[in-house]
Amino acid sequence: MKKILFSSFLFLLINVSVNAQKIYPITSGELIFSNGNVEFTDEYLAQYPDAQVSGVPLRFTAFFHLSQYWHFDFTGNFGLYTGLGVKNVGIISDEILYNGSPGIESYQPYKIIRRLYTGGIPLALKLGSFKDNLYFFGGGEVEFGIHYKEKYWNSHGRDGAKTKYTAWFSNQYQPVLPSAIVGVQFPGGINLKFKYYLNDFLNHDYKNQNFVSDLTRYKTSQVWYLSLSWQFNTAYLTKWGDGETAYR
Image 1 (tube, rainbow, N blue to C red):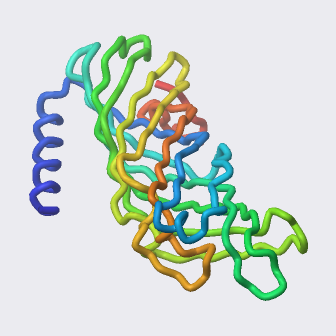
Image 2: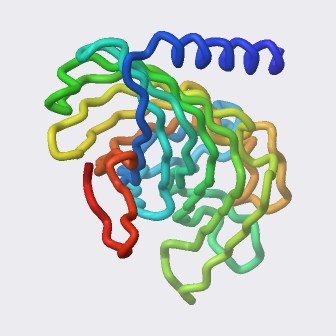
Image 3: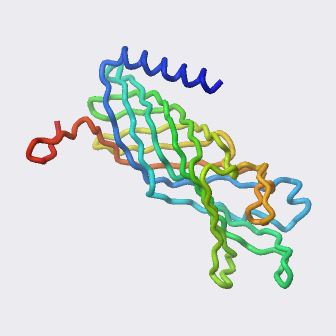
């Protein structure tokens, strides 16, 4: 199935390249404001009725987000783009969890931050005035997890100690993260985009003896984000013999 999808994608790009009137590269970074929805299963709440997700704070990241896109303009008003990108996505949750440790109250508040570096391939249509660099776009992206980090601490702040775990290609998250994207490109290079992940962020089958890291308690771990970026056409940058950079 993966070979069929890859072959179809490659075939599409070849046909797009042949029919496109203009092809050019775009480089972009992002400022990401992410949020989501985290819920416990009914079974977990039946066992621990005072447990709860007390909040899902907004998460802001500026590092590390880098994408290289290729734009294919069929006319001055209709085209598409694809490319490759690396992003830092994740979710923060404030939770009240049962802690059965001796000498500690049964339920305690915890702040949990989970983030994942992904590699993604977008494909989106765009419609507008390319001459004025003003257009709308919409499509999807498929991302694959690379590096996972989990960090949490008791939000009572008794000793300020944090517990951190990191892993390459771990099984705490969904291996494939498809998403839908919509946005608008403004003159001057400013780009505003909304992304909604179509499946859960975490692998809810992951079992851990550590009660904080046990992901089986979750029914939902949805993520979405709004990003702001500045995009520039890398084909406009050329190096002259004297080392100066000029814009074509």
